[in-house]
Image 1: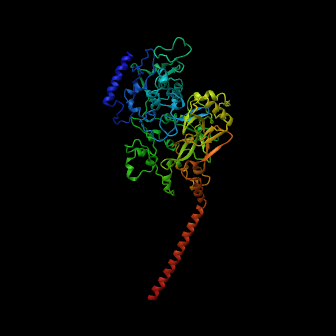
Image 2: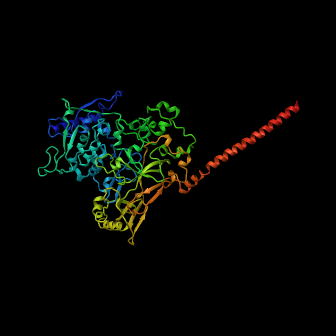
Length: 622
């Protein structure tokens, strides 16, 4: 029966797709009310879930939500299209960072073709392994469903784990029982097809697909010779089903900020402020706005990211309104096109020369933590798994993300960035640096690099010259004779030279990976420049001369730093001369004012003399 259902559903889907017919929930009739979602749950076999059936399967978001919404359109969304080679990649964003403390590795991964990132396969991760590690904060789709990039050796494991389908509830579920941390726990156990059900609040899922053999059958259960392993099982809350086998979903159109925060939170690591109440919130959210007030999307879920020069959606006449400039610096002739629904204050920027708007983004002055003499470290949800059950709360755990760093973009504008320094073992072939997988490196390093992190801080293990040489010598025995093993870390590539010592060189592969951030936005009263020009133009200003940590486990006793100016087109000398001039600017102002007063006095003096001569001349004529 299930096979017949799948067959007819496939025929219907192909027919509907060919006719390009919109579904019930794809077109709005103009009502701003959210429809009541009292619907039947459908499993991946396209069968309605009924409490009297065995085995009970998890519901499929693709089939359940796909009854009324075009799943193929939704797959184009920014959250789901990472593996789509035809998708517009946009400016570089947050990568997935693979971390292995034992092998001293932190390396940026992405399926997008951003500069500086690596594909998971390049470091020996299969797609299934990638999803198991990072699925905790992936809303499904992409690598979780893309069969074209799956490796041959994982085909049987995918049959056991199932697809990690797009989980519409990750964003659109307004139910308080919805638990994204449970979703993360299920993906770690390879319970991909069960993850959405387990986190929905409708059911409890026990067991682990990870512990099942490759020949595990979803319908027949575990093999008799493995009684100690518990296969994944769904226990639905029967009280949630009505007599029609319908379930109510508290679906929300305006997504709550808390749903965004599970994947998009940032923690500032500050020893003097370690409680949440000691930090403010983005000024827009504090004023009552939602994330989706600016980050909007249509059915295709291509969310507007709101940065200047965004290429999508170019056809939308109002997309510019959802940028900083479009909202706050709208021209008078464009006032009628506002869509924000909020009274956006128009900043005067009194006394600020126009060159600042050519050289700086709005976020350079208004976003992130107030810059200090040395950039700080932060932890982010996507990179450090914030909010996940059992996540380490250590402030020293790798990867170390450094922020803010003021970097000049391709358009010539300086913007605040997050930064981290890749560290990994690799081989060099000519000018190419090819990372090695942990499967190759770990057996070698575990006998050489002693894990002295007994307190569980997750920080770097120590790597000195002798240990580095020993690891490189060991790697030489397992790589090709034509390849030279190297260690990439802290902006350098380290190798063993001809005299048996460690030498280093610069290489693009060792450059830090950076990405722009925009939040949290500070109010105008806390913006750079509020206290005067020397907020930026002083010999100790953070914008130019702030110290940026160079993070590396190699030679831990030596700390290295770069200056902000190293990430900009100006030279240190130019910045120093320009900033030095501001020491005399107050004097210059007084000099100009004095000169103006003297000139006015002279003009008045000679004016009175001329007037006196005119009076005398007039009297003589009379």
